[in-house]
Amino acid sequence: MKFRPCIDIHNGSVKQIVGGSLRDNNNYAAENFVSEYDGAYYGSLYKSRNLTGGHIIILNPASSEFYKEDVRQAELALSAFEGGLQIGGGINNDNAGYFLDKGASHVIVTSFVFKNGAVNYDNLKSILKAVGKDHLVLDLSCRKRNGEYYIVTDRWQKFTDVKLTEKTLEEFSGFCDEFLIHAVDSEGKAGGIEEDLAALMGSCLDIPSTYAGGISSFDDLEKLRSLGRGKIDFTIGSALDIFGGTMPFEEVCRV
Image (cartoon, rainbow, N blue to C red; front, side):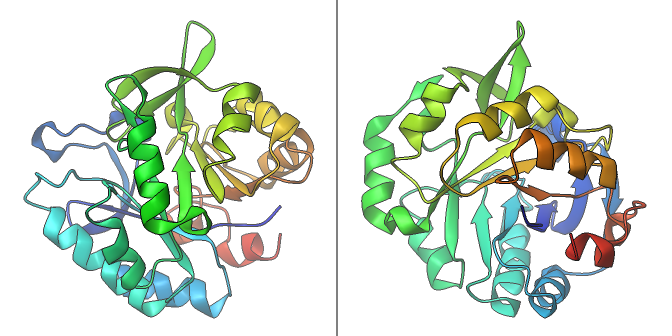
């Protein structure tokens, strides 16, 4: 189990938001923290601690007036830590190669693969062919509906009909190098992990996978270690002191 840092970019700034609040309409998100520093600062920080495998997420859609600046901030981070960071947010066949060329180790894909509520296998196979399995991360971020987890898309705003189950995880593991899984309804709330999701991930995953959502204490990390059987990596956002929280970044780096 290792720490995978994050750089979330929204409206041209590095920030931490309440995940479930994100809306394309008026570029809205409830903010926990807006950084005075740019993407290069965080890329350099993570490089200095050798925190490989972290992720950059662009939270505005390509249609937003902020998207160009979001991309610029992402490029600054990638340049500062070339080969050390993954990138997601609006990734598709047209731009995946661009971000790899800019220094991303992997591209992270959700909405391009899960279209209109279902799996678009043509898109999945085409991006797999374009970037290769070794450079592809599938984001299976999910929310609960009627007691079961469903994959959500379009910046976590739309439910698909795809349940997150052991069978789903086993199937998709054949198409990618890693999984990134946000517990969306806990994201940005620092209210504790979603234990059901952590247990599901720990029960069946055999490729590198990162859990995100709700981690607020070192007790939460111990729960995640136990439920995930020591094989789930983790990311922490709003709870970190570098993002206005109380968990010391330097101490988390030593976990």
